Figure 1 (cartoon, rainbow over the protein chains, first blue to last red):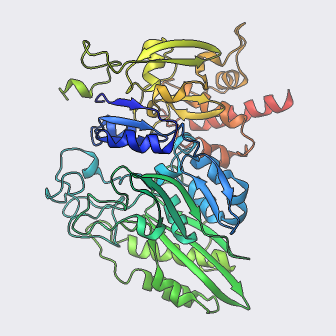
Figure 2 (cartoon, rainbow over the protein chains, first blue to last red):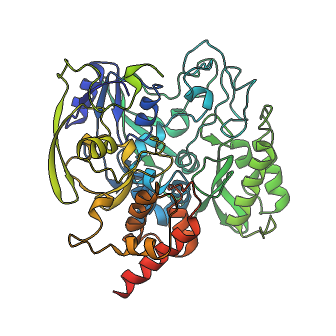
Length: 334
Length: 178
């Protein structure tokens, strides 16, 4: 690994000032940063350790929202009583991600900032517009199965966003609080991650030196039910081929306030807004879920090896909606 | 790769430049050590190459195999993806600290012996450290499916998983019955 300077500030303002002094990376848990520094994909001149900033609390705000510090570990968040009780989709998504060891170290802010798992991005040699803008995309004409998207892709990049946690947060609705040289601001979770478009090197809405301090979850809906379904090549410790986070309430026999988000199939945590519109106010039925699932992938583009993700993602939606509404939609696996 | 900056050397690439060295204290198996390190040294390398605690193994060096697992403040972590500086002030337990001082094995070590829960042994230290943290974790159930899920970050190239599972459950019974 290349050498870097190390700073451990004790306050947010000092962290931002330190970060601005050099080509820097904030260090939270380090599970992405050190992985990528070892293979020379990230090359910070300075690492600014933010573990001394006291951003490790989970608190319920007066308006009912739940504010999660950027340094709260994935394990602590998944196991917190407020999350298990009010946001089962988030707890389930977190526990389906990575391994026990990684969840014990990885943080909320770091998970939001994690990088794609595209092997061409990671190999340091292949043309990759994200790593080296303008060099081309090796995935589009290459092997593009497991970690590649069918939604939100562009001719410059088709890497899927790898997070499970972020998919649940997209379904719940959240805001990202950031501090920067110009002060503080709130970014809607849905606007935080950027589509690759013609600038795949830009992955998020942070300005230079800005630091995520919290993610605040929307107040839980009364009587809402939620859950996360992750489909992958093996049963544990694997990235999603397709996943579905869903939250809804059932009132008078009809679905209200449905929120659906997809993982493994899109270049960012993906809200399926058209599917939500179809579900709103309707009585649950397998036909309705199929219609919603179809709409969710209306704009999908299949590549050579990942066309299967379109039906797989649709089945993830149908199965999760069936589970939440108590409607049998799939045959039990034997 | 020939680039000297990319190898796993502990310490700075330029021996004449000591400007960024930092002194930290690591508490490992109850003993506190003072180390002067470059900021980019990961805990696994500090343990193995500075403290001669070679029980934790370097398998993949990317948090994928679990051979480097140590327990920090009660939680299992990949020591290969952790800067040594981040572990300062925390209670680090490695496989060398598992048995009693008189040599009495920890229940998980005894169970691995009795259940033949290893073949080549390279992953075993990581498996046992992961297992001890699970045995102490009330949030993790001890049925086979829950143990397998909790230990999915520990890869055994020899495929000794069945005996590892038996050993963990056996150690759980031993501890519960004690």
